[in-house]
Length: 255
Length: 265
Image 1 (cartoon, one colour):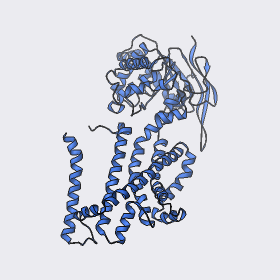
Image 2 (cartoon, rainbow over the protein chains, first blue to last red):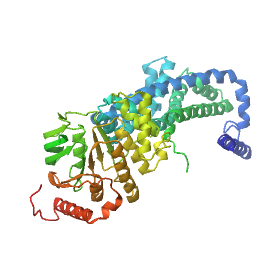
Image 3 (tube, each protein chain N blue to C red):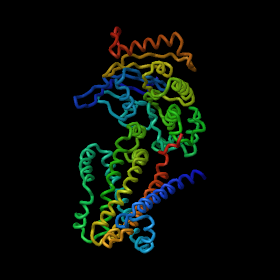
Image 4 (cartoon, chains in turn cyan, red):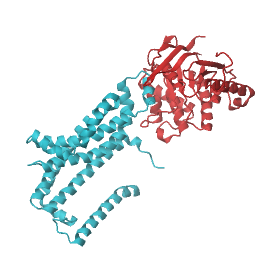
């Protein structure tokens, strides 16, 4: 009971303290809302636009999750290729690193031009592009650092490469995979919102943010940021829950 | 008696950037059925290569490896292996780890029989009550015991042990030596033990093969007379001291620190 209380109570108290500090900061400096909105300015913003928050939040959410899903599939396959083949690893790594180094904000206009008007597709594409890298790297490292003895144990019994992959390599890589997925979740949100904010006539929370900017509705902008943070937290903890189910064995019990 | 393992004139070299690196050169080892051979030699003399050859994980450049009258050309299910690293699968319980080989090797056992056999083996090595624990909950010695059970579950003809006790402390190691004798009594196997520990070699094996330095050939073979059930006290007898002296001298020759005054066996 006390353990549950601590698991939920401590973070909630921390959030309350943070909000209180924020409120105090704005009040103490007597900042106007166009400099910084206070937490107490947010509920009215949510109240006025709650239906927009729901529809736009949903748009942002499904496109992020879809982009992430594609990133998981593509990243895992790429990671497998690089994890199993030395040559492919040598060939692909510099390309991947270079691709990852490109600021994705610069890719937005290119993608927007390339697929004009296909906003959903573009958004999913950017979420995907920004989030597959850590997954590919972690899977490839997980596979390439598999101790040879693990392979030998099954290979000496005549097991096929596929059997070795399913029985040993894949489960052994899961902790690294989930570590990368936690990073990828937040990255995917960044990708989605970049596209939503920058591309004209966008949709989703990013577009709502942009409309707040053009209308000088500053509390709305802050309200969107908090909504994004909330979605990010929810998705992150969904990944944590999945990790507990599929890779819980990697967690050492304390003591 | 027919030899279960026959290694005849095996040569092998690894290809490195600076040309071929010969590791085995004229290796001769014969192990009769039920025999237990320990292989000792200087570091890096190709002992682990030897285990991979017997397991069929690689082919020698020259020479032949025979198992039970059949030439080894690839992996075969009749081999069980245990390494210095117990390589247990962390996401499985101990019982499921032990059962792993039966998921690969075709077996006549039903699921229930297989589980019974696994439990029997675990009790044999003193791991009763740990069947449902995860490997991370076990000590190093206990993991090695579990790894031993996994190597035996499919009743292999040949048990290959590549320095299985090398990473354990001295007392745990001696415990495991006793366990090995207990296991061999109930679950007869033909074994090849790679080790650096001369006391271990004469305590466990009935034949000790000394390899020369790289490239390794068979330099000396010591027969350890059987005395029935062994106890640790057997290591502190004059005979044991003689055997250890001979082996230590042979290792010194292999390392090039003592001249070879006698023709290698």
